Amino acid sequence: METWITAGYEPSLPVTEKSNPLTRDIDKADAKHIVHLLKNCDAEIFKKEWDAHGSYQTLSSESVIQKMVHLAKKVEEILKDPEESLIVMSGCGTSGRLAFLLATSFNGLLKELQHDQIYYYIIAGGDKALLTSQESTEDSPQRGAEMLRMACEGKKRVLFIGISCGLSAPFVAGQIDFCMHNMNVFTPVVIGFNPVKMARNEPICGWPLTFRRVLKRMEELQKSNEAFIINPVLGPEAISGSSRLKGGSATKIVLETIFLAGHEAFFSSKNITVQHILNWMEIYKDVHTVTYSQSDKIAFLVQQVGESLQQSGHVYYVGWSSLGVMGVIDASECIPTFGADIEDVRGFIWKGYDELKNNEGDLSSVGPAFRIGHVDFVNDILPHVSKSDIIIFLFALDDDLRDIETLANQTKLKTSNLHAVYHAYPECSFPIDLKKVFSSVLSVAWPAVPLVSEGYHIKQELSTKWILNAISTGGHILKGKIYCNYMLDLKVTNTKLFKRAVNILQKFTRCSYSESLKALLQAIYDVEELTGAMTDADVIEHTIAASTRTRVLPTALVILIRRCSISEAKSRLDAHPVIREAVEACLAASQD
Ligand code: S6P
Image (tube, rainbow, N blue to C red; front, side, top):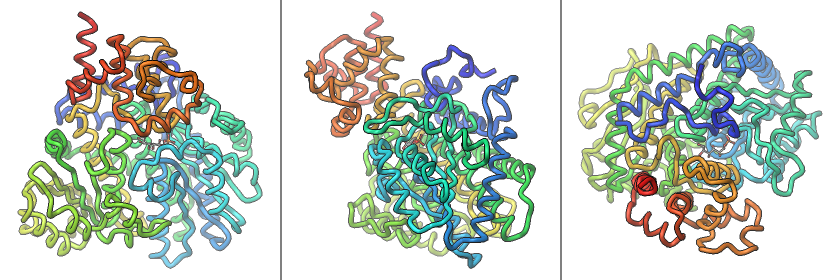
C-alpha cells in the first residue's frame, strides 16, 4: 500500500495537496532521475486500485466509468439537438486552459464534420488567463456564476462541466450552485481528484456555502442522475499541489473520452458501453508508454533547459497546430508554479490568435507577452536571442514541413541551441535537410497519421504535455526552485495558495499555526510588527497585498527557522539567490 494512503500521512491535507513520497528527493535528482520520477508519478493516473479495500476510486473504477457512459449519452443528445443546447466547461488556471483547449478542439472537429458547434469554455479572469497567471479571480463564486449565466442566456439545455482538480475553486463552486438553482436548464458536472469528504470546506468570503457543501447537495442529485461528480484519485502530484501535472492530464483524458464516445454514438451509431470507455483508457496508457520510451531524450532537454534557466536564459516553445497551444499552456503555468517571470518561458503558435480561436480574439495589444504568433517570435524574439536561450520546435510530421523548415533555418542563423520535439508516422518522412538544422531531435513514433474521427492530435497533445511538463518542471528543479518536492517561492495570490503557504511553513519549521501565520503576514506586509488592521484583514486582502511582493514564503520560512527579524531574513536570502540553497543553509545553521 502506498505510504500516503495511511491515516497518519499529512492527515489535514486532501490528496491533491499531499506530498508524493515518490518524489521526496526530486530536488536533488539529476535530469535522468527527474524524468524517471515524473514517469512513475504520471503512471499513477492509470492505477487500477490504491489499496485492497478500494478506499479510493480510480480512473478505472466501475462507478467512475458508469458516470462517463452517462455523460457521453448526454453529449450524444446535445449533438442531436444542437440549436438550443450547449456544453460549457469552466475552470481556473490550468483547469480553465484545458476547458479552452477541449472546447476549441472539439468545436474544430465538429466544423470538419459540418455540424453545429456545441462547446464553450469559461476561464476565470477571461482570456488573459490563458497566457498569464490570474490566480486571484479563482476566489469569486459570484463572478463564476455571472460568467456562466451570461454564456448560457437563451439556451434550453446546458451540460455544465466545472473543473477543479482540488475540488476547491470558489469560482467553480459558484457556478455549480447556480446550475442547481436552474435545474430546468442545467445538468451540473464536477471534475476533480479528491474524495468529496476532502473537498475544501473553509468559508468563502461573502458567500454562504463551501465547496464541500455544494458537492453534498450535488450528491443528492447524483442519485437520480441529474448531476455527476467525477472524482477519481490520482495520488499526490510530483510537485506538491501542482495540479497542472496529473490533474491536468487526467482532466484531458476524462473529458476527451466522454466527448469522443458521444461523437461516435452520434456520427457512427456506435453503442456507448463501459468497455468502450475502458478501451480509451488503455489507449491513453499506451500514450504514456510511447512518450516515456523517449525518457533519455526528454532528460537531455531537461538538462539543456535547466542550464538555460540557470544562466537566466529564456525558453521558447515554437509550435504548430494544437501542439503549439500545448507550448503556450505549459509556458503560462511556469509563472504561478515556479514564480517565473512572464518572459522566462514563452510559447508561440503558428498563426497566433487566428489559430487559437479564443473567445476574446486578438489580445496582442495587451502587452508584449500576449504576442504569440510565429511572426511575433521572428520580430520580437529572434533579433535578441542570446547564447543562453533555448528554442524548442513542437510539431507533427503531418504539419506544414516547408513552413517549419523556413522558420528553422531562420532561427538557426541566430542560435544553434535549437531542438525539435516531433511526432512521427510511418506514412510521413522527415526530410534529412530539416533534421540537420536541429541540435537534437526527440521523436515520438505513432503507428499511423491520426484521423479526425479519433480526435485528430489528442494523443500527440497529451504526449507533448507530458514532455513539456517534464522539461519545465525539471528545468526549474535544476535551477533550484524546488525544495524536497515543494515549490517554496510560490506566489501567495489566492486563498488556496495562502493555505498551502501556511502548511509549508508548519511542515518545515514545526512551528504552530499561529506562529506560521504571523511570519507569513510579516513577510506579506513587509513589517517587523503587525498592526491590528493587518491581523484583522481577511485572507483575500492578504493575498492582494502579497501579489506585489516577492519571496514571501521564503522570507517567512527564514524568520521562523532562524527566529530572526524580517530584515535579517531578507539579507540572508540576498546572500543566496537560489532559494533551495538559502533554505538549506538556514536549516543547517539552525541545527548547529
Ligand atoms: C496548478 C496551477 C493552478 C491551478 C488553479 C486551479 O498547477 O498552477 O493555476 O490550475 O489554481 O486549480 P483547481 O484545483 O481548481 O483545478
